[in-house]
Every structure is written in structure tokens, then in C-alpha cells.
Image 1 (tube, helix red, strand yellow):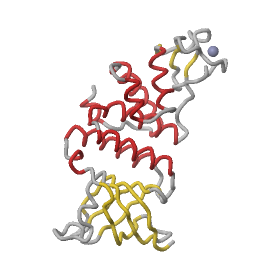
Image 2 (cartoon, rainbow, N blue to C red):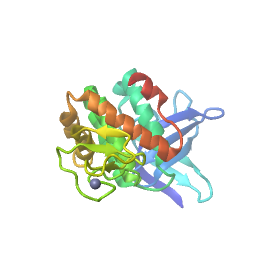
Image 3 (cartoon, protein in one colour):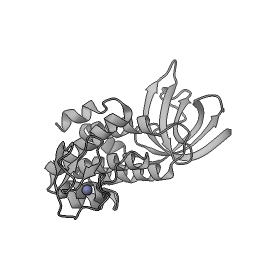
Image 4 (tube, protein in one colour):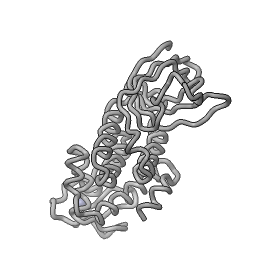
Length: 249
Ligand SMILES: [Zn+2]
């Protein structure tokens, strides 16, 4: 194993004994990494401000095969989101995203698409906090998709046909959808054509363009986000993001 150098996004930190901290990062080349930053709690730490949540950093650490925790030797700040990350609403939303990443991203399993997607979501929301909600929905969609947990809303799960864009579909208990001809059996929730297009659009565009697409359609967006959160809860076998639910009932 030995020394690893990569780019990463600080997800969270928590105190360890003495002057040390545990740092959780999503890295580009090594997936989710938990490491010890020795002396990080000291005022004049060599890690400087590179440990603030949601900082983009260059990191070097030593990894031993049999240990989950790595020993962080160096962290250099590349981009700080400190000003926006101190905003309570932003913090609440991205803490939820951070919690999801910790649940979905396996340790030391690199996924460059997940890393890039997370970074662009963070950048987009930091540039314009008014798009936080669509960016989070975009993030939830991609997190499920990259994990292989997103049902294909392009097709009816009964007949395999492709519902027309203006065709009402119904959500199934397994979160697949059925077309209007097949619906009626086990139908639990009608999806409007726009709600379906929200999920399809998120998979085809950037977070910013997605935010433009759903602009003024908050009710549909919240509905789709709540479906995604039910998918996430089913995938993880537990509820996540209660703090998120509190700001977006
Ligand atoms: Zn069908």
C-alpha cells in the first residue's frame, strides 16, 4: 500500500484523543478515506485550514492494508468553501449529503464519477445558494444511480414499453414505474409527467441546468426528492437526514 497522494473533499472531522482529529474524506483515487490527523487540534497545526468541512484538498497519507484508518501526513488546501459552509442552511443541507456519502461510498473504492459529481454539486450550490434544493435532488439521483440503485424511469417495469413524455405513470412499491396501460395493479402513487421528467433530466445534464429546469416547480421537486429519500432509506435499510427533513418538511 504505502503512501497515497490524491485530491479529496473533506466530508467531516471529529476529535480524537489528545490533540488529534479523525478526518473523513471522499477522495478521487481512493474512495472514502478515514484518517488520523496528528496534532490537528492544536492552534498551529500543520494542516492549517485544510480540515474545514467541504474543503477541496491535496492529501498525502500512509495506508496499511489491514487498517481502515490511514495516517495523514499532509493536507494542502486547494479550494475552501469556508464562507458558504458557515451558513447554517447550507451546512444543514450538505451535512445530509455528507451523511449519504459516508453511507454509500465504500472505503478505499475509487469512483471518479462520484467524486466529480459531488464536487460539481458543491461548487454549484456554493456559487448560488438559491439552487440548494435542486442540487440536493440532483445529488440524491446520482448517488442512487452510481450505486446501481436507481430504477429506470425510462421504461415501464411491467411491459418494458417506453411511456410517452405526456403519459401519466404510476410508482410501484419497488420504485419502478408502470405505464398507463399497465397501471392499476399494485399502483401506489401517480407520477405526473413533470415529476418523471425531473428524474430523467437529472441524469442527462449539469446540476446548474437541472436547477434551471425545475425552477418554479418546487412542489414537484420536493415530491421527487421524497421518493428518492424513500429509495435511499430502503437501500440503506434505515432513515437518513432527519435534519434535512426538518428544513424541508
Ligand atoms: Zn406497461
